[in-house]
Amino acid sequence: MPTIPVVRDILSANERLGEENRKLLERYHICAVNVMASPGAGKTSLILRTVAALKGRLRVGVIEGDIASRVDADRVAAAGAPVVQINTGGTCHLDAPMVGAALEQLPLAEIDLLFIENVGNLICPVEFGLGEAARIVVSSIPEGDDKPYKYPGIFAAVDAIVLNKADLAPYVAFDRPAFWQLVGGLNPTAPRFEVSCTTGEGLAPWIGWLDDLVARVRGAA
Ligand code: MG
Ligand code: ZN
Image (cartoon, rainbow, N blue to C red; front, side, top):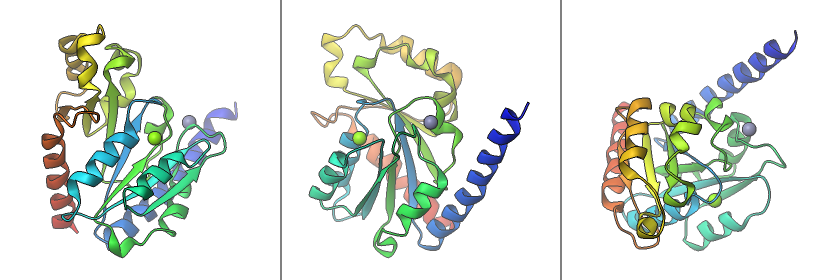
């Protein structure tokens, strides 16, 4: 039965390299946030809104993880943030070695807050620590209110939950109390944010949470 030991080897190698990333980030006083979601939930849109909101206060850098293309990295670069695109070439999650290689290409001394946008996938990204200070999941109204029920692992593991596309709530049968009740059963303590990256509604509490997180990471460093 070789399967299980091989998987364990991969995960423990990932953990070691994740710790190296963590030490590097700590040395530069960078607060890294691993952004996970299914494809199309609005990870890049949330990052772009956040870059704009923090302009002049915190310097934001971004690592973009996608199976292919660099369209998201181009959008981030156009917003003025330093960005590195990782193309995983088919792998459905980022791992610590990929992020370590990307960190070598970023101006670390010029970054306060680093978003690591994971590959769109609610399953395995949560298994791979990247050296981040916090993990979040972005869910969205059009995906339906059953996502915490179908993918409990990621909702249980994260440090904050963002529900995006709040502006679409009038047009979609999405039961918000049911969604948050499911979330609460899996993860009673993670802060919750309802936002729209289209209209900008609800973003202030999210930005406040990031401010506190960055201050906490700096205080610990
Ligand atoms: Mg994206
Ligand atoms: Zn994967």
